[in-house]
Amino acid sequence: MTPGSAERPLPEPISSGTDVAVVVVSRNRRDDLLASLPRHEAPVVLVDNASTDDTVAAVRAAHPSVTVLTLDRNMGAGARTIGVAQAGTPFVAFADDDSWWAPGDLARAVVIMRAHPRLAVLNARILVGPEELLDQVCAEMAASPLGTEPDLPGPSLLGFVACAALVRTEAFSAVGGFDPVVRFPGEEERVAIDLAAAGWGLAYVDEVTVHHHPSPRREAPGRRQAAIWRSRLLTAVMRLPGPDVGRLLARALRSRRGVEGLLRALPDVPAALRRRNPVPAQVRAGLRLLAGDAA
Image 1 (cartoon, rainbow, N blue to C red):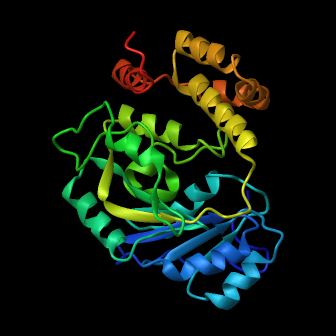
Image 2 (cartoon, one colour):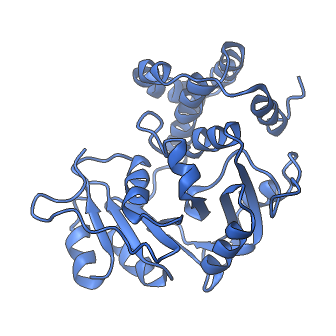
């Protein structure tokens, strides 16, 4: 892993006087990125996952204030962890190259985070496309069966959507950020359950909004479902007891995409086993509740 290009030294961290930065990870979506970058209302750290479409040169020319880190290989979500370390701010907002926080809402989200010191992740409301349709996952988060804890600003979560998340750097870094085993997509679950196991809170906050205009350059839905199954299975190997892993494996074997995900996961199982550290019973109980399993 080599952040920074061979020709340029690693940029200086963002000023310590800045509360929040936006970390964007991108790969081969130059046009989407050039359109979304001006919408961010905080300093931006762009981590480029080894693009081959001249993204880096185009961003440096059009947006010289953006801190650009280049990677020599595609690290998936792990690139966000590098971006967080580079930002050096107490809070970091994640955005994709096709998403951005609504005007004024990032600052409001920081105020909410400061008012709730146990809150590690704030998941904003997501409006999709020019039609501004509510993302279905937000309706599910708003109705979380975990309820709303008294010291959190919204319904409790054991997962989040990275492109609509504001994280407390202290907490995110303490659990290792996104790891090289899961990569992408579905990278959020392991981080979320590790935060919960460490006593941090995660909450859905409907008062702040992220806009997501999905790029036309996206993985086919079927392939994405298989990739999510891969992440789900590897996360289970790392953090769940054997019987829970077995039940999830049985579910995977009942669907085509689950089987594809399992096959994708197999090469990374040894690495997942090396990182194995099952989470406490109360976190597992929450996961079962979210899955609709009262057993």
